[in-house]
Image (cartoon, rainbow, N blue to C red):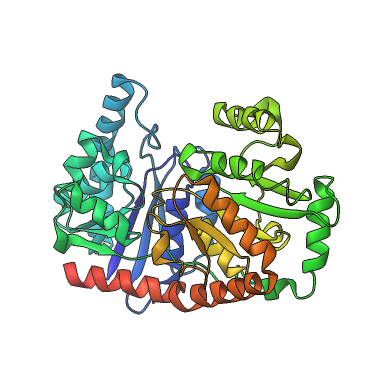
Length: 395
């Protein structure tokens, strides 16, 4: 089967990384992957690098337009964005015919959906839309136009499939397939006996005592990711654990560059008297050393579509705290492979952190069981085979 991935996004976002993982893991004897990248992407070099590392991938670069990541900023930009799809359509149709493309696969963003659906109908081949996002993001006429004409959907969790059903998408077209996690890349064994050094290095980086207990959260700075609840939980914990610190990775390191939400979090930490225990850690190209320096990982996001940061922390054998909502309960078995709390509950987070600190051996066992869960349930070749089965079913 020849499958064309259409990437009109302006940035190499996590959902596109999921697609690249699929393309790299396909059995080339069964599924041949092609990709069209957007020459107008702001980080086109990253796209080209991602294309180049897969020897089985055939890649093309075409001008697929701009303003593709978020809602259009103006009616003119929106109209121009859609009109540009028609200008590139003949070249895409030629590419589809010339490479005997059987299926077109796209993300769930407006431009990707519009262009992929338009191309599928014009070329008379089926198309799949990969649902990575909560249903609230689909309040868009262009998206719903594409949804009503898609051949099938891949959803990253049963939760997202249920949200799709509530939008009116047909049950028989919805195929839940989780994201894969590379347990060979996220593997504590790669660092052998360096974990103590990494713990010390992380504490030294932020001028913390060697004895400091560190909770880490690695996520975009969004309200629904639960950073606020973690800061509120710190107010209930530092009286018992004065060496406890919260490290928030994913935002700006410099307060001068804080987003409005980061400023709110900073002000909240001052108000609650925990600002000396809350660290805005910025961003890291490689989070594995950070994960190994933590005592526990917490991502109390609510209605999380899947939770790649959670599975990556689990693969590194870090005890994980997350919310009992969204796609996360599919991943975590409460108190065996992780700790689940109710959404928006700072009290629940206090209880979970307290339990893991007071029961260090159980926390270690939880970390080991978490890694085994990821190794067994989310290998890339297994996930890619499931997606190939869906291609086969719609053909």
